[in-house]
Length: 353
Image (cartoon, rainbow, N blue to C red; front, top):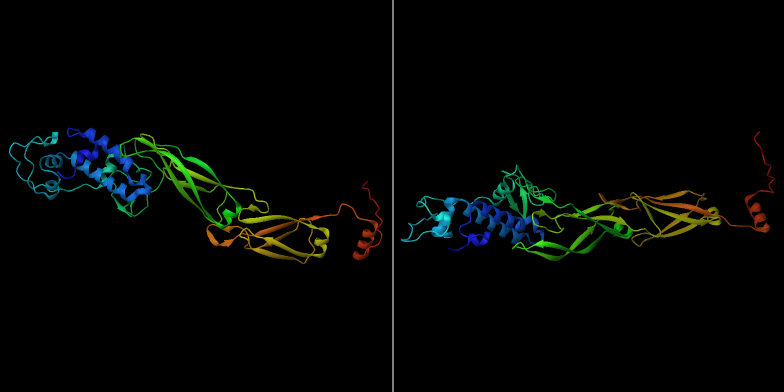
């Protein structure tokens, strides 16, 4: 007989219409390509096979020909007279002789999926694929896409099937990670259902690519990577970026800020500040003017990368604090008066009446 459609759907040969629908729904939830992103090619082939089996067995005429003559006759359209004494073993084989002019027209797998999961008034596909009742769809590059070429999404629920709420995890990143960008590998363990519907634990390595300039609160979503439970679409797994404190730099939007303390002598006479950046460069910053307490030096394009404009960076802002001596000797005071051109000051208090 060739392909055994009954075995593919895991039903007996007397399965009725409701049995076939239940079997198809269960297997489609397991083998839908959107639910198997790491094995798209095999799951797509399996999903098409399941859809073809349902298409044949749910159509009385197709099923009758298949039961009597097998897959080859069904698909070729060459329907011979029934052999003497042979009757089909399935319920659909009983009845009149099949139409000899029959032509096999397989239904599209997407249409079958939309029909069965959209019977309650339209549906989004598994994982938000956007499969709606009656909407034409096609395969492309191993993903479900709309007829307009839209990529399959990750949100949404199938009619009659709930989706588990998303699971969020904090992902701590150093300021260097967020400055330069980095790939992090995260090992997860989750419960999934195999082809027989049995639950098992699967371990998986997820690669998270941190882009230069990403900020605290940025979310990275892995669609349906949560635990799988019967009748429930797995939750999305979300990683939320958090920023580790840095010993030198503070982040202010796209700017980097440093609080740097200098002595009174350096504030008055100047000098050179050597600064190591987050990517390991050394910047020499000359201080030629008198630095007042709280003043700020701004270096353009030395801050954090701007994620939407990779070649552009914010500012590096250096805020200066001046450290005054705790005490001065009389000789030091005299030297300062001489250098600064002042004489012994007479400080007369004034009172406001």
